[in-house]
Image (cartoon, rainbow, N blue to C red; front, side):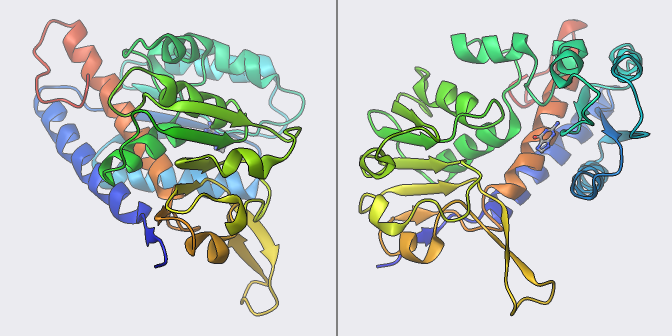
Amino acid sequence: MPAELIDGVAVARSIRADVARETAILVERGVHPGLAVILVGENPASAVYVRSKRKACDEAGIHSVTVHLPVTTTGAELVGAVAELNADPKVHGILVQMPLPDQIDADAVIRSIDPAKDVDGFHPVNVGKLLIGERDGFVPCTPAGIQEMLQRSGVVTTGRECVIVGRSNIVGKPMAALMIQDTPAGNCTVTVCNSRTRNLGAHTRRADILIVAAGRARLVTGDMIKPGAVVIDVGMNSIPDATASRGVRLVGDVDFDSAREVASLITPVPGGVGPMTIAMLLMNTVRSAARTLSASGASPEALIGA
Ligand code: GUN
């Protein structure tokens, strides 16, 4: 029987509805959650992402600020813009859209963000908190979204083999940190593969939960998947397709047709992991705003994991 699909659009919609409810509660208590997004230059894909984040904020009732800087912006100017947002009490979350132009040191920019507003979870303080299992940091949105999807789909993780293909700071490494934690949504035995891994299939075939974030179109095929595995495809690759109106088509890092015949549950591309990232960004922003309430001594009961 072909695998069931995990519908990322539906899961994300339900999270965004939760976020909208929590936002309304916070507004009633005098805190209006705010997210600032900084975009440097004119990268068309980044511009699309930034617009969809703004729209998602509007729909959830979150205050949003977009700072658009020219492609010639220096690192010092960008750090200056971050500093202003760090000091702005109306802003609870700051996201600097990546990639940045070559003249800017992205790591230095990430370090300049107040860790308490780093809703991307990229600051070394938040990376460290995730690794040691401290719950009061921010978890990067894509791995947090994947863990949430697994939970909401009823996937048992404890004691299972989780194989992650890809070791990026944005997905692979934080995903591994989440799945090894001693939590009900973790407790996996985790293997992280990379582009130098020998005999990738020997590893992926051991996975009960296979998470692929390699950035290579259809790298993982059905014969590399254990029958009944849960397959999460993080890939978003544009490939030529003469039959498509734009001449290109979006595919994942997993060969969907062959994988679907073997897996028990699988995320499609598009419509799988993608929509979860923005939903988790909104959730992190509301959490950040809720923490300002608890810091002020007010009772934030009912607010998402604040
Ligand atoms: N560019 C692509 N994905 C992301 C993301 O999750 N966060 C940021 N800041 N930039 C990105």
